[in-house]
Amino acid sequence: MTAIVHKSDSNKTASPGTSLAVSSPFDASLLAGQLAPSSIAMYQRDFAAYAAFAGSVTALLDAATLARWRTHLAQETDMSPNTINRMLSAVKRLMREAAVQGYVTHEVAAAFDAISGVKAAALKERIKSNARVRIEPVAMRTMCDAPVAERLIGLRDAALLATLASSGLRVSEAATLKRQHIRAKGSGYIMLVRGKNDIEFREAPLSREAHSHIHAWLAERPVESEYIFTAFDGRGERVSARPMSAVAIWRVVRKYANAAGLDAVKPHDFRRFVGTQLARTNLRHAQKALGHKRLETTARHYILDELEAGLTDDLY
Image 1 (cartoon, rainbow, N blue to C red):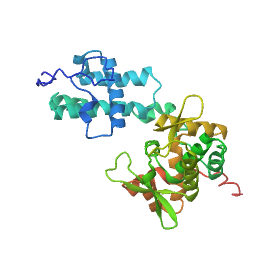
Image 2 (tube, rainbow, N blue to C red; image 1 turned 135 degrees about the vertical axis):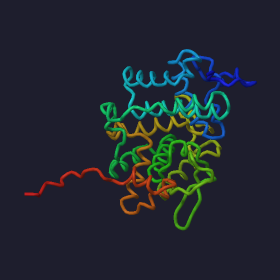
Image 3 (cartoon, rainbow, N blue to C red; image 1 turned 30 degrees about the vertical axis):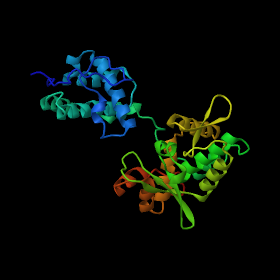
Image 4 (tube, one colour; image 1 turned 180 degrees about the vertical axis):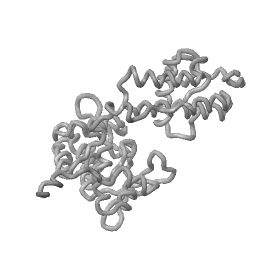
């Protein structure tokens, strides 16, 4: 059975900017309108890695190649089981969509779906113990107080850190935050945020301290921009009107985390900080702040159930 269903556009090649090892009849652009561009880019990266391993269109469209790739990733790389399974799932998702759009048969897509992922228990030594870093309030205060307010870049960094520490925003949400998205509500402030799976804007909390830092930053910023957190160009402190990239936000967080002795902290750990702190007293508040559709998601990831030190100190 021929894997490719011949269509008038069956000679379609990869999108510009991608580097598939073979001239695949389709790529991650099949998912346009279904996923955010950043997610499509991740699918394309994973699919390109699979295509490079396959080496030919015939092999790429053979489910046995995916099984061999799984073995290769498990034996020849140090990737975590979660990363391997994400990459396998990306290929299977694209094959399902390729079948829907007529590039391959549904039988081919079903064969890919039948390939299971790796078992986390089999590769447990690759799971990093610091994948999720718990930030204590004292450490968060140390990081947020670290930027030098006398410098323009310090004003921006203080505003960014305080916003992340009080809102639970994802990096992508912070990078695209605009002035018009901040609103007064009662005696406090909220932000209008549209997350990765949101169609409509949702409300996210913003502390009065963070709002004060944002006001101080924008009052001193010498350029006009609709974005709140804008970039600095070059080696000096030349302020740009363009928004910070996700990578730039990562660098800011890592800079102050390292200075505070928290080498493994990532921007998403700020989101976990907000979630876990709120979940201590009100799980529903944590769910609303983080924008989770289901309360179970909040409970699974943000309820603190780690073993507390000192539990057995006075048993005898």
